[in-house]
Amino acid sequence: MTKGGEPGTCALCGKTGVISAALGVCKQCILDNYAAVEGRILHAHAASRSEFGLPAVPPSNGSQCIQCVNMCRPAEGKPV
Image (spheres, rainbow, N blue to C red):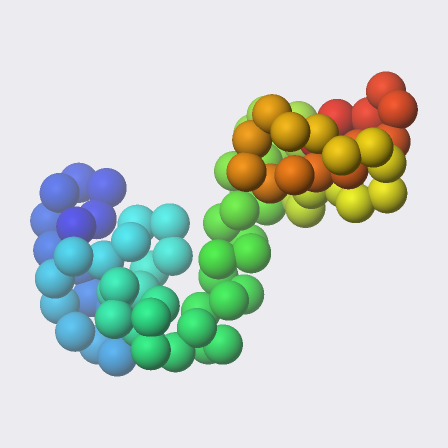
């Protein structure tokens, strides 16, 4: 469903039904054609993180944090 709860149309396969509002594609396209969807996923992830003042991707150059599943490695004093 789209944000309004109405069925959407997948941008990749054209099927109508439950479509991710953030990605614009259906579950099957995510599962079957990840390479075509990966850019959309990375963009949505970066946009979500930016709303919290976080960098687009979790850092990987500091000490390992264990607060969530990302296992980021933020530099001292930097946001994850």
